Image (cartoon, rainbow, N blue to C red; front, side, top):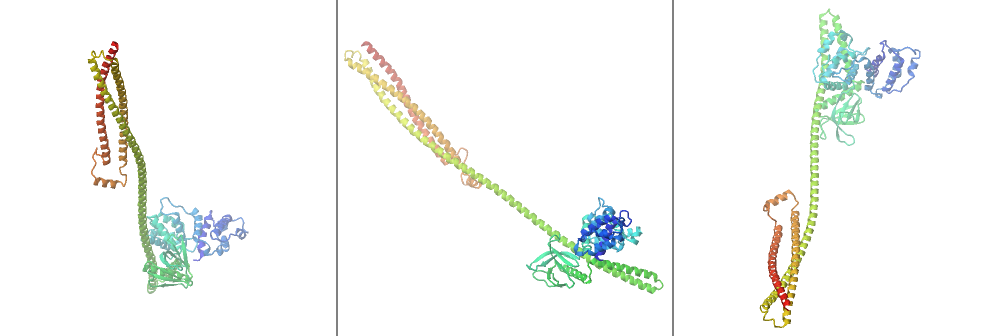
Length: 640
C-alpha cells in the first residue's frame, strides 16, 4: 500500500463527515476549511486560490467526491513526502472530524478510552479493504483480535465473532465498518475486556508494531565511537532505521542508525567483558552492540535482517506484506474452492483439489502459527523484561527508602547534637554566671572578714579600755575605802579630837569629797565603756553572721558543675556519703573557729559581767558610805 492510498482512506472519512445531507457532495466553503487543515497538517505550502480556480465553472453548487479528487491529487497528494509530516497527527485530524458525526461516544462504565478508540480506528484503516466505503472483512477482524489477545497473554476465543457473523449475514458478505467495529468492541461482543489497563497496554503494543512499523524494541548495550565505553540504550527497530534512546519513555533520543540495503549483521565472540556481541555494519560506520542473552541476540539479528530484506524488496512495512499474503491466500483458497465445486465429475480431480486445498490451508496455518509463535515469544520476552524492570525499580525504591532512613537518622543525630550543644552552651553560661557569683561572693566574704577583723580589733580596744577603767576604779575604791576607814576612826575619836587643830579636820572631809567625785567620774566612764563594748560586740556578732552567710554561699557555689552525671556518679561511689547535717572540711573548720570565738567571748563577757556586778555592789556600799560621810561632814560644819 503506497502513501497516497493510506492518506486517501483517512481523507475519505473527513470528506464524508462534511456531507451532512448524505448526497455525496460538500460545499466549497467546507472544502476550503478541509483543504486548509490538510495543508497545515501535511506541511505543504498553502494555495488559497487553487480551489477557486479549479472550480471556477461551478461557483454555486457543491462539489462531489469525484470532483474534489483531481484537486486533491494535483495540489495536495502529489506534493506530499513521507518525511515532511507526522502520519499520526494527520490521522488524528481526520478522526476528530469524523467522530463528531459518526461515533456514538463511550459510555461511562466502558473500559475503553477515546485514545484507545483512535488507535483501533488507525488499525482498522490499515487492515481494511482497498474499496469504498471502507470495511474490514471477518478474517482481518479475527487477525487483529488475535494479536490483541496475544498481547494481553490471553487465549483467543473466536466464538463471539462466529456468533456475530452467524447472526448478521451482511458482516460475512460485505464486511464490517469502523463504527460497527468500535460499537462491538466497546460492548464487549468481540473481545472480553476485564482490565482497562491491560487492554490499553496490549493495544499500544500492537499499535506500535503495526501502525508505526516497529519490528522490535528493547534494551541493549552499545559501544561508543568517541569515548569507546559501553552504555545501555533503548533501541527501536523499524524497516529503515534503528533509533536508540536513554530510556524506554523515548524522550531523549541519542542517535539513529540508518539501515541500507548492503548492511551486514555479524555475530562475534564475547569481548571486553560483554557477552552476546554482534556488529551492525553500514557503509559509513560499524556499530558494536551487546544483547542481554543469547536468545535476545538471535532475535535482534533476525529482526535487523528482516528490516534489511524489506529494504532490498522495496517494502516499507512488514504488516503490509503480511496483509497482501493473507489476501492472496484467501483469493487462492476461494478460487480452489470454486474450482473444486465446479469440477465434480472426476473423483480423482476432486481428491487432488481437496488435497491441494488442504495443503494450502495447512501451509497457511503453518505460516500463521509461525508468525503467532514469533509474536508470542516476543510478548513473553517483553513480559520478562518488564518483570525484571519492576524488580529493579523495587530494589531502587528499597535503596531510596534506606537512604531516606539514613538521612532521617542523620537529621535526628544532627538535631540531638544541636540540642546537646545548646545544653552545653547553657551549662557554660550557667557556669560562667556561677563563677561570677563565686567571685562576687568571695569579695563579699573578704569584705565581711575584714569587717570582722576590724570589729574584733575595736572590741579588743574597748575591752582594754574597760579593763583600764575598772582597774582605775578599783584603785579609787581602795583609796575611797581607806578614806572611809580613816573617817570612821575620826568619828570614833571625834570627841577626843575636838580640841585638835581645825586645819586637820578640814583636810580629811575635803580629801574624801574629791575621792568620791573621782570615783563617780570613773563609774560614768565605766558605764560608757561598757555601752561601747556592747555596741562593738553587737557589731561583731553581725560581722560574724555576715561571714557565716557568705561562707555558706561560697561553699554552695564551690559544688562541681562539670563533667556531669558520670563524674557525680564516680564521686558518689569513691567518697563517703554525706548524711543530713554533716559538714564539709572547710565548713567544719569555719564553724569550729566561730564556736571557739563565741566560747571565749562568752567567758570574757561572764568575767566582765562578774566584775561589773562586783563593781555595782561596791558602788552601793560606797554610796552609803558617801552618804554617811556627807552627813558627818555636815554635822561638823554645823558644830563649827
